[in-house]
Image 1 (cartoon, rainbow, N blue to C red):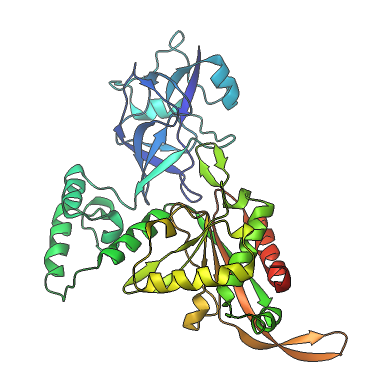
Image 2 (cartoon, rainbow, N blue to C red; image 1 turned 135 degrees about the vertical axis):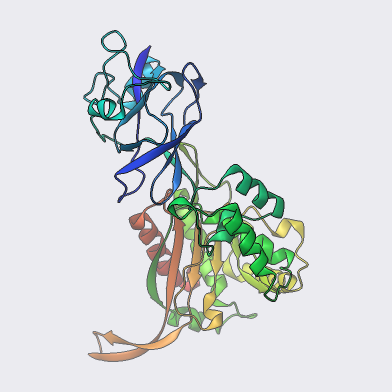
Length: 403
């Protein structure tokens, strides 16, 4: 067995230290990988320090309500030599505090003055930091959390509440005053759909999301559309192009579960339809295997059913991406949010006539141009991969005859 240190993680680019406010384990406890071992507080958030792997707590050198710089040793775990080697952690590195055989390490009940104990700490950050889980924008007491649970509220609902407690914390008095003031305003019940959309977006926003954009010329799409009966809308072209691009490489639509990317079993793509007080997302199944001409009727049928809020059970859920045509509202640019179970959402803005320089004619010519945007889970793919996927979608839309 090998002792490894529990390190104060890097909790943000501008965070240099954090205060230990609660111990979640004690000496002798067995812990699992990524288990919360203590809560720490910065000027911005309350977070948790987690164990890097399975092991047993052999020492907790940190003290409650004491601040420690990033890289400080907060305690020790006893782990297998194989786990220590896998993590690339050298138990004898410069951050190691003297072992118990040399100088007894301070424990939870230590009486060593903080100034003396801190002198033994050598802050160090190497490799990836110990994972930290954000608990919320500010610390909430158990009483506060219980009251919010009772009312069915989330931390996001208190974003506009000014806290009067220490460090700007929202106290139970602040909360009750906030509720009392709400009663003075006009209140209307939120529909079940609005509540469902709000919950989905709240869960989606727990991930790091990013958006890339690209202007595309729609002249070929508009010309092809005139030859079709019934006529497909721009959304159908985008659906089919995205499906073909993901059929070539499904990794961008994969979901990060633990340490694995779960690739989609089928290219099922949803599309956003505005309904009363919310948005519904019908799903077209196996879009990569269905030519554009065969999608048109299925698409229009699902749109009508969605607007009537009569979608059958098999027409929702299980999609790997969504297409949102926000151009129908006259918008030229937007950043839609992927659904919680999805990694991608492709957006399309309104087309506008713009000048394009034609080298062969030596002059500007008018073209219909629209913006395509791709919002994605940044944990799964980066800007380069997202850009390549969006470029491929645009290239496929430029040849609508092949869709």
